[in-house]
Image 1 (cartoon, rainbow, N blue to C red):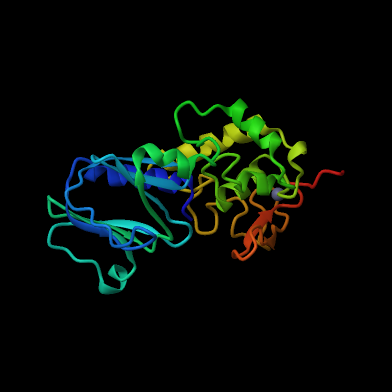
Image 2 (cartoon, rainbow, N blue to C red; image 1 turned 180 degrees about the horizontal axis):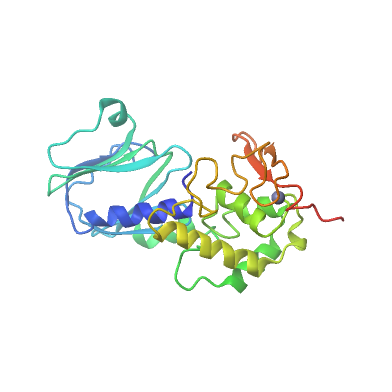
Length: 267
Ligand SMILES: [Zn+2]
């Protein structure tokens, strides 16, 4: 699942092309479809939550978001993408060193002035993976959220940026919070401090990517996610699940929880 740690790892991988010049390339999706990128030098990659920023030396930025389906890949000199994958290309950047960077099936592709990045990111909360993340300020934003449940508040990128469904479910388990817990009943600081630690560990530790239990076995990498009806890894009670449509028209997101480890507080 592309979450903040996925995009952080992706940016680390894409930085191998920083400094290269686009020899031939174009944007193939979004409002800027057809725009040539030829002659621009890639000067950096940055992230904010699940958003990726590819910056060029002409003061412009390619802003992309993968949502559930997008991906990026780099092909070496003389190598081609399979035709089926190439059909989904929304960004192609053939570099002066022969490599090609491909952005595939990206639902969000925008080209803008680098100075205008705040226009597309300004609505987001603080990034859990940025240096200087202030857990107290983030907890204030969490407390100010009007979301009815802690699950929805943590998924709201305007509160903090970087958590997706996997992390929200696993964090609620580790903090003993039922996903439907009211925001006011959750202790924000330790919850967000744990979120930052776990996301950072997943983003930067080899072999730890999106493994929350520390176990490598099949079906044991997560405490509750994907484990509906199976015994809780801590107390053996059957894990429960429910689907929620948080945004009208969007596919439902599943919540998982252990009813014993994560009791719903009495209101
Ligand atoms: Zn349990």
